[in-house]
Image (tube, rainbow, N blue to C red; front, side, top):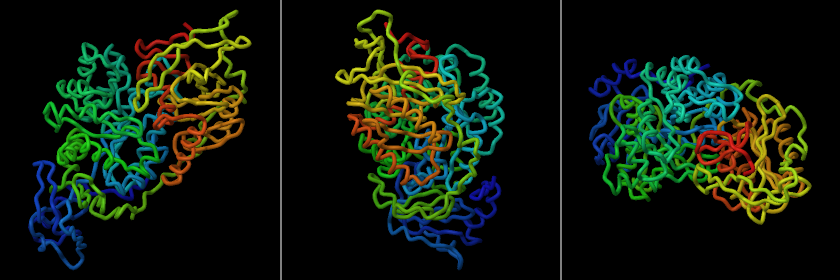
Length: 600
């Protein structure tokens, strides 16, 4: 692996930085006449220059003309704000359906210069080898992409089967890799609460390396279970959905990560802990968690989250701290990034307005990487092997019979458990419905907004199909929608109203090698090929976004009215978030963390 964009460490660059700051040597770059946005002191200082050397900030002062030599690049800030590059504290690159290189290419023009990524999606498909591929391509980029070693594959042992499992030995090995900054979100919170030796061994390996343990406590219970989870070591949590969640996490010494992704709108309901209750904002962090390609191309990335936080009442300087210095401090990197101060990586944005944050000029590691929304650097690609591109194994050609749901013998109707989708939120509702039985088979009911859902095993080629029912998509007529993105085990999820089309959809995804397929009235009407692990495309974000846009329109053509319905579709197998999900082992009651029967 060639680290084509490697930056010198602070000790390696120190002599040069000192010489430039002292006026003995010229800088590589000087930015003149801007408003210095200082996130340490939370103030804006007008009329400042910035000197950069070796990809790092050397000095910030009212006049650094002395640092300009014959070969020094000079950028006129023209009175604009000089803002630290934005940091995304918790995210999954795979959710953008893009590789790290293409994800970086998509977000750099939006001012994101640091990302803290948890590649647990690919870990479920390809194990430690897949994580290493993501890690290696991340280190090749012109911006900072740090990797958190995935902690939970499977996310809920005994309730799902993954392509690979992550072990404490894997975690210990990964902690030695140069781009690993900590442990990814500890989703198996019941395991931590119960003192599971495997989970505690992973946490111990991370803490022994002096790195940060990511949290994931997806439960409304803020009593003994929550206290036990915090005692187990997770240092942050992004699963809060209300003010009480944010306050509880901060009071127990965690960082509250508030997310605005493509489908998660959890900032507005939690940021009142700062804006109204007055809690210390340095313990709150903004993140995206999951953003699909369409959001990145059309709406933005962390600049979108920042603007949303300001709209929700946060002071711009406070919101900026939440997506710069707070993040750097949390991961032990305050001396490395997150602010415009000496020695830090020279990552910054020039913007004409601090509240709306138009991203006009982006500098990363001391060089211009984007200007006026246009990427100006190359984002190198990893050579993804064939093993990463051949991951969908169905074992057989599926037929309508594989999607038949047999009712109890002699029944004319059944009372079925139904997964209820909640718009713009990760949790589902455990619903029940009376469904008709025809020829011994329980039937979906579009009049009641109840479609059929199937999870198709795709890692080992067992030919297994788990069937159930789902409500909330609003599908009408004869249709099917399938995806090999199915958090977190990433089997194949097919939702539909017609068994024959569900089978055709699943077979098409198998032939495609992974991705998304939408069928209506017997024909495929939209596809998004995702050949890498069945999760990502190495095409540019704009290309993937265009395909995804057609997929969203196809879902609407089938009757769906949900906001970001695809994200909801992809989470239907996420067996660590209540209340009810589906896995290759059956229907899962996530309030009890146990398998349950489809019929009551």
